[in-house]
Image (cartoon, rainbow, N blue to C red):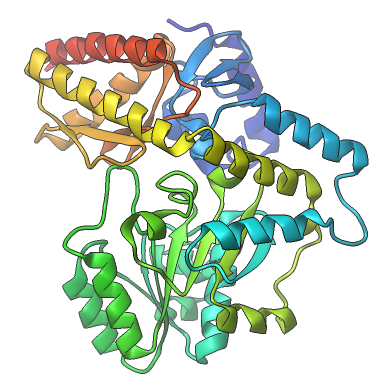
Amino acid sequence: MLNLEKSKKLFTHALEIIPGGTNTNAKRVYNLLDMENFPAYIERGDGAYVWDIDGNKYIDYIAALAPINIGYSHPRINVRIIEQLEKGSLFSLPSPNEVQLSEMLIDKIPCAEMVKIMKTGAEVTSAVIRAARLATGKEMILSSGYHGWHDWWTAKIGEQGIPACYKNLIEDFEFNNYLQLERLVDNHAGKIACIILTPASYGVEPKDNFLQKARKLADQKGIVLIFDEIITGFRWAMGGAQEKYGVVPDLAAFGKSMANGMPIAVLIGKKELMAPLKTNMITSTFASEALSIAASIETIKIIEEENIIQRLYYLSDRLRAGIKEISQRQNFEIDVMDPTPAVKFEFLINDVEKKKKLTLEFIKQCAAKGLLVRQDGTGVSLCVIAALSGDDVDYTLEVLNKVIGNLKNEL
């Protein structure tokens, strides 16, 4: 049983002064598990490890919701941030590093001809929708995947506080379901500004040339094709899913892993679609904040020099193979999903409530043994960090074997 007394006390107080207790919804402890069995606060991180405020140490497979791809507190990135901090973090005019980073992104990402730097994924996905509407003069959006908290997208999930008219301007389609996408394009012929989709995600890859078909359809109908590469960028490949799968969108949104945890995101794309933004009111005082830009430049160098992405695939493959072996050894059916550079699996149990209960019990027992993992839909995800060692992977698989053995006995 974990000692979480400081964590519980602080989060109980936080609930009184912060809506939801903390400012990132997915990091609220009750969205992960509960205060009795899961830490509410992390005090520090180093490599693939984190320590909570009660002093408990964990191997972190949440990775700050995916931005940490290299490792916490990387010395080279820290040095670069400190060097920039000594010069200043924000000025009355932009840092020249904006130009350097933009040039690097144009060199690395297939669709990048121009770059707009911002701070968050939600910001750049909203900006990319604005760019598509500006270019086409049309309003309708076809969407697949999660794209942030702003009104244009959350209207479709019934979020409160959003004008009802927004719901009429977006339709959802299932990833890899090309026939559904094609029907929606026909149903809204002549009204569609863009198709925005997440081109891959934890344990989910495109099937049956889905991305190629979407690209062809968008070209035929004069629709802007957008990839939301907030997760896939600098993890699936240096240039994201568009590089890995060989399908180039018109516009794309990148963020998370591009600065190993520092707050930065970018809108990139074809010049004819990006250039009109120079006169459009998409701007922020903190878009030119220099520490995150410096961190991103160093992160991209490290990813390339140290073969970080290959390491992420290697670690993910080892974990997947180990989980499959555990499934066979324990005679416990587990669906270990597509070989992406993050691991996702779920227990094959027909009883929905029992499956949910066992999944939460799995997360609880993993935390008690020093592993932070999170529920992902009806399954569990492990977002690997390149700093993981071979011993870390071995220990992780030992824990998973014990925990799954315990769960088997509860069935």
